[in-house]
Length: 335
Image (cartoon, rainbow, N blue to C red; front, side, top):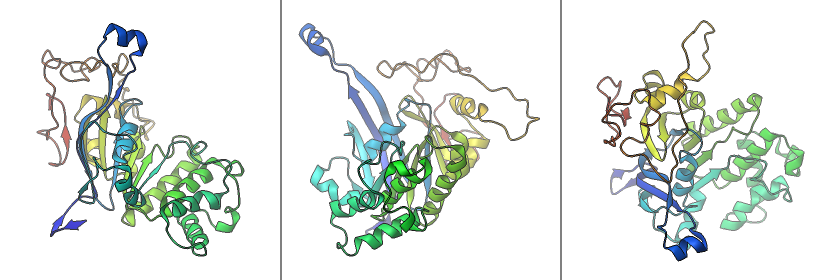
């Protein structure tokens, strides 16, 4: 988007912090125990342009979904800024956000839970149009069919009157995508869009998202599958315990990983060549409790390359000396 001659990214997140307070209970309140918080997202920054797919990758519990919900303002961030099409939306109220909802949509992880079992497909897809007052009553059926075709459910007449239980998993996810596309959004947040689907239908859904990106839509894809991100995304941001520890062009991050955590993730991806005898790097221990973040580098309790300085220094993202591009950055004192 261009404002006053300046071109802005479609989405720009800066120093985003989102924490969840832990209830103290009656005894904790009476005893005056300090309020503890889950540090879900701790000061992350990234940007997304039109026609670009950014993959946010990491283990379960690293803060990926909280990041997505914060960006969509479904969760209120504690601090930081979220700029959409050049405008700061991080402090907008419900009424001010409502007009923006048409231009930013989300696809949820579970197509079995995200669709109302009482609604037929036509009702599910038409509901966003009704809520936002888009189109007339006579015009909406045509928009519904267009969204179904765009989501790959053709002919639309075959699906439009079905209930969710009459659809396969892949068809349900396509219906969920169609409900997001019917408003013609600029930004699509896809939260683990294929994790609940069979391998045989994943390629179709990912191919659909890739086509939408090529048509100019900005897509923020949340995934734990680094191989999927490497194949479809333009850029990859690797998260660990609420922080982005490495980011850059997808090819650079996969072929020349700099952070030990990224290297460990890539090492366990199945190899194409059966003669490849490289050993996977299995990280020791469990992810630390997000209530009590380790001092210094938060990855140091599990890092195979830990040094005496790691518990003291919290590294920032910076360009490695042997990085292939200036846009490739990692948060590790060894780079």
